[in-house]
Image (cartoon, rainbow over all chains, first blue to last red; front, side, top):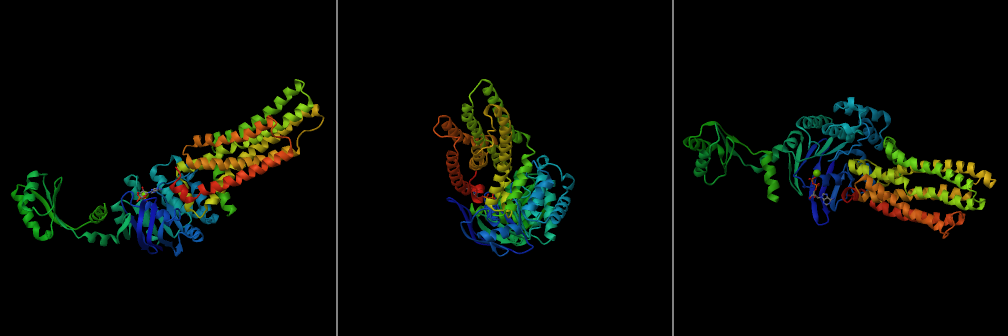
Length: 307
Length: 244
Ligand SMILES: Nc1ncnc2c1ncn2[C@@H]1O[C@H](COP(=O)(O)OP(=O)(O)O)[C@@H](O)[C@H]1O
Ligand SMILES: [Mg+2]
């Protein structure tokens, strides 16, 4: 459904997106994960035919984003939730959506039905005649999502839809994305929130100007392969930390509150020794276990390697 | 270009504008003040015993004043509708719809031109009616309508309005404050007033249809030149990456 090949965008001397290739299948929720300035917005803008690419290629539904005639066809089949909601604050929620529905050439009956459906799904139907200037951030974001859907697009692009939202609104938006996933819509989700990517995406690409990795959340988790022993004490103790560092000089030992983390090559085998050392140093162990690497580990490793 | 798409954009802007009372005021009040003030002034001049020949020299200047308005009035709406979208950051989702840059530009221009032209032309009708009422006794005939007035109101004023909108779009692409954009946009009255002053100094004959046609030709040329520059500035890539 979405395909890029060596997609590159330069702003003057600055390379914002560097040789990015990926493909997203129909019905897939694809997470585009990366730190600020990674080039997520730039990529989405190229895919939505808003700005030009410098080199490489991108196609949506087989149409070329840089072809004048194709670009109108692409824009008809996609919806965009931009990083800034960009609502008309003087107009009501309904009028905002109706305007967009008309721009997409939606017949009136379908427009009405879609507006009703999405405003109801997002809990905004009661507020449909209220000027959006009075809306809370969360309501505005939800309305921006409804606006992107008013013409029933096959592909939905969302640029950090939960950034700057309170936890409750974020959850509503995330749950809504999961609803949309059931409808088999292709969703391209920009985010810098790992947890969000993990929870809603079928596949994730990690971007830091270049594409660092692509895979399912599970594949990415396993990528770094680092596992470690975690010991939880009754109370934080510098003595125990010092003792562990002394006993295991070659591995990384860190303390975070009452938790001690030991990066071990074979944590199962080493845990008994670790616990013994802790007890000897006077530490009282509440919990000891081995944890696998997380998406966060992979992410940090990939993103930092480049920095 | 699909006019239906332009019209969707224009009608949204028109709906927004009609909700902003101060924008409506600044569009309609000035032309109508002039439409009422000038005939009163003319009546006063007649009461002072001015000769009929002097009147026929004075009336074209008054009538030309409506052309100066064309350089002023549209900038209020044009600046509001473009800088307003810029401030609300609503241009990005708008550009993501299947609407071309030119359709958005034309739609926004229609939304500025229609009310401005409506205000100036309806005020000019009032002006002509009242002026005829106060001058008919002295002149012995109805001065308006005449070919000169037709050229000013139906050719010069529309051409001036278009130029004002184009100028405002250019200003709006560089400025992110509606008021500043409106003020800079209204600077176009300077060259327009320049033509008027040239008329007062007898450098050009504003009552002469030939002269008016030449002015119209020059305006049309500048309009086209501006259109070229405006189209280059109003491109999605420019709007999203270089507009401030
Ligand atoms: N219009 C622009 N002009 C110059 N540089 C830009 C422009 N837009 C984005 N950039 C730069 O491109 C890089 C990627 O930006 P962006 O795509 O917005 O990242 P993200 O959305 O991942 O935070 C950043 O370094 C940013 O400063
Ligand atoms: Mg961004």
